[in-house]
Length: 138
Image (cartoon, rainbow, N blue to C red; front, side, top):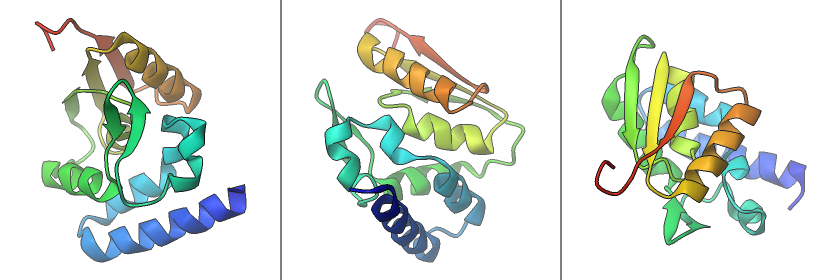
């Protein structure tokens, strides 16, 4: 899929979300976050389909609508410190970082935590911290 195709698919997803999600700040935050950056390259073509996709290790990147619905339910104002349990790909942490003052996210799978940390840093989310926790702590 080309960059143009991805942008078109993203625009269609954002339009769909704008019909369903009342908090337009959540929709705008999701518009700014490149979902494809948080998934294996073989799934880039499906990055903006409204469904979960495999990220390996038996885990998925969540369906965009569910991400939007959960974040909308938080009613973030911008000065919050948010704790996320289960970093996964880091996508939801990035969306949260667009809306909250600070995000602390915890993952029990070291490879996922390291990957999420790399992507979040590359995209400039300095207000998102990724931590690795053992199964007894996570």
